[in-house]
Length: 256
Length: 262
Image (cartoon, each protein chain N blue to C red):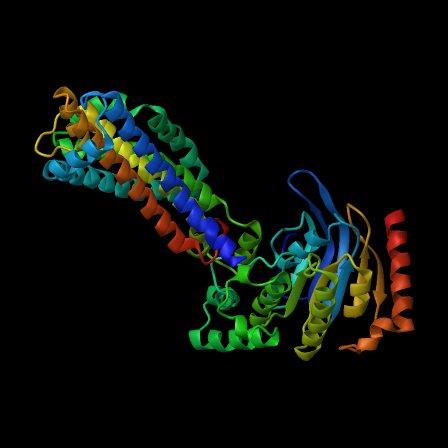
């Protein structure tokens, strides 16, 4: 029941969670039976109040936790990359060596690694800083390194757990825009956790709303507008309407 | 701003130096004016001339003490780090052995030294063993703590990307432990010297190789107080040098990335 069978029930599905429940060793019930599908090419956001089990859900998807009940299936050979809330860089290693890490752990060939890492650093605009140490960079730049490290693995599914939550509003908006561009350019499949309904509507093709702890998915909102979205999408009436709808869904979820 | 910082840096050297010079001057004048005989308290100038005159004797002893200290420190590092690696491999090993490491730490070396000196034929080896025991514990406890103090996020990251036990150890735990290891090294360097001197005091015999503690004992018996002070000065200077070298190593290893070595 904690099977992570390398075969998805559908070719299109990157991951499928079926009636997954989770209780931590401390006895805290984190998730009620929850079913979530993510199809290839989707940008799915999960939104909900603090402590609603969003991070637990991500950890289950990544295989860092095993479900107490239910099934997590991943598409055969699916490569998962994880961008945590904090940059989570090795402070003793230069930017380049941080990005190399997952490839070296996977035992990839050296020439391969050099090429892929260079490309990933170009994607996030950090080529000039490849020899810097993490503490020499700003918070936003550290987050970019973390994203480059995830991109370098050429993931079939990119998990992002409130990646920009600790950044200032201006940096956050810029990184949101860059992420959206990257996602459409590289046709990424993303599962994204956030507190911000504005961020969720701007980035996602689909949004899942979760109730407070123990969490479960109480609603779903599709945002069919094509990626990448134009800059004026964020000031459009349609965007405001979608945010309003999502806000109402969140309020309803908190009431149950 | 930078000139202000530079001034502060100068002050951190200058102020203690000034206090030292002032202290020596007061000492010198007090001894001269009060007419205190050198076999009670010698003047700093007298200690300096004794140091120069007795240099052949004292430098030989200094070399012996330094050698014992360095060998003991090296042994403490090797044994301490290996023990720490063993401890983090399994809780069972740590739980069974840690009480004995603590026992070794809390038992005064003065109390164990006579036994070791009786059991071990070569006095030099006996002194090294005593000094190693004194210097060992900070290496064990600090390195163990360091190997365990890994950022849980990085631990998740390594697990996610399929790192094996060995890769976790070499690429994650060892670098995480470095700041703790060097903090321990600074303490252990001083303790190794203390262990070497104390053990020689207990041994009391110079044998073929007599260290600075032996010189202090002998000078005390002969009421050669200036030589006692000269030997004492050399021990203190050795301790300061050890601390400085340990700090330098720490700085070289950490200053690029760790906050403590900024």
